[in-house]
Figure (tube, rainbow, N blue to C red):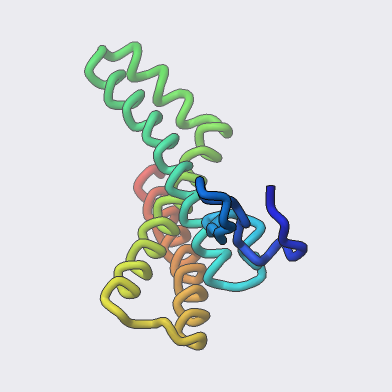
Length: 148
């Protein structure tokens, strides 16, 4: 049980086996993050888009399995993906894929040791968000033009 009054303290006061107190971190714990900070928001969204992208790959497996199964199975999948729900899923997956990719590149830049000062952190976050919007729109334009 935490004895800290501040929910953003991010630590848990526990006991060692000899009975002496010890501070243990709770991170990653959502109460420790300020979601109005760019780094926290992009980090949590990166994790969420990774999960969404993993779930979205089920559609790719379904499509490839139907392709291997025959014309009727493939037509059924194509019908679903061409429906309104299918388009919503595909648009969502496009946005998720671009966000997760760009946020991953941002993390690679951090792994290289760059971009830790606050202006660079915010600039990188806005680049991820703006890049996601621009590249998602470009991808959708290309897909619609190819489809028509």
